[in-house]
Length: 556
Image (cartoon, rainbow, N blue to C red; front, top):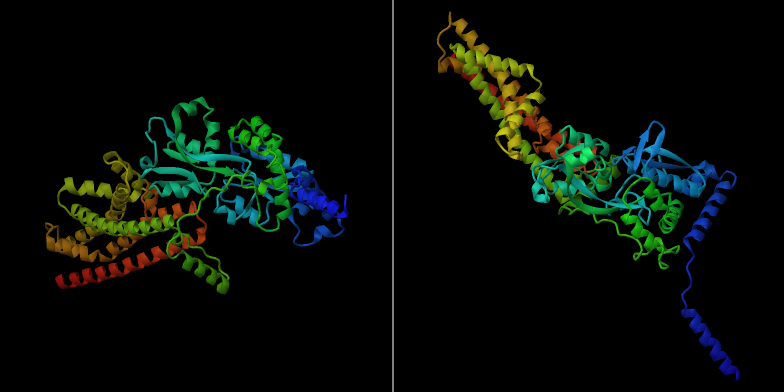
């Protein structure tokens, strides 16, 4: 064989070898290497005192991993005394064991689990958190996911709720921070907010809530109770999403990589599955994932970034408003030049913007209605208390005393109960009930002032002449200051209408903050709105007072 042929054969073999796939490293080997490197970095003298340590290195410096878990989420995270239990808690223990450190648990809920990561109060959160695209900008999710669920609506068995049209104008109890709240609000439902999911079943039982929305995994525990299953059922589900463990966006690269590899191994070897069996939760998703991560193409050190192996995050991007960009730019400009961080979520997404506009419109209707009702009841009750007829005067005085002695919330609730006994619930009915309640409360006081002024005028005339329109008009004019005072009080009291589900601005902003950040800015804007409204009411009422007083002077 000539040298030329030998070279050609060698070249051919090289070409063939170049085309052969190179076997990827196993997740086990990659994880062991990463852990060894982190341990070595932590063992360097003085290294643990250095700023900017990756959290994995710091975990070995401290010999513990700080994990945020829930304490009031049956089957996933509960606490009785010092004893913690649940799927999330046991997963955290498995992670700590594989790292060779101790777990240190911190209580979190839906609203605090992300801020605690950002504030470096915890290293890892395992807290029934759904992975959606919106949260990708807040935390770094671990892939593959460790569980999956969907949100379900639960209510009494006798209540017919089959789909979105059936929940319009109804109030649904939810927890703060759930992204599914935005979808509920977009179907014209009202929200009653709670910090912890664990109170929802109790609020269903005591009828504070007629409907509640939460993960199916949460309600699965309660449906194992025969009494609960007999009284309530699942209406419908939506927003299926994978659950993710999460670490902070910055300073956690090594930790995130180690947890990615560990999650692959836990799925492949059935560790997640065994922990789930011990905690009596659904196994369907975990069984499917075990099959995925035993596939040769996924069981590699790059499997956690392979789109063919991992699940996508739920797309939770809300439709932006046409001016969302300008609002974001203004927020950034304000923080840059003043150091004040503010957020205006009501101007950046269409669901929030629609809620905000409707809230303002309903609040203005409520204010105008409360003012009109206050004037009407003031005149009517004032006239009745000025009457010579005992049959008219004493019932009016008794009603005034009752209203003056009753808390405004109780009057509001009674008004709503009467309205709902006569009409099916709607936003208009709730607003109408609030207008009547506010009008009665303030009108009764103003009416008493008119009645007392009438009595004074009759006394000044040397007796008790029969009431006339002229005399009554003078009584109203003399009571101008008191009437104005109670008109202003009616305007200031309108936010309390949110207590009975009236969709005024406070209620709308509360709904917005249930799925968006920026609570402080949102409620500050609410304060500015009502300050402006009350200022306008005071100005108009002052004009009314001046007119009434001039009228008294003319007729005196």
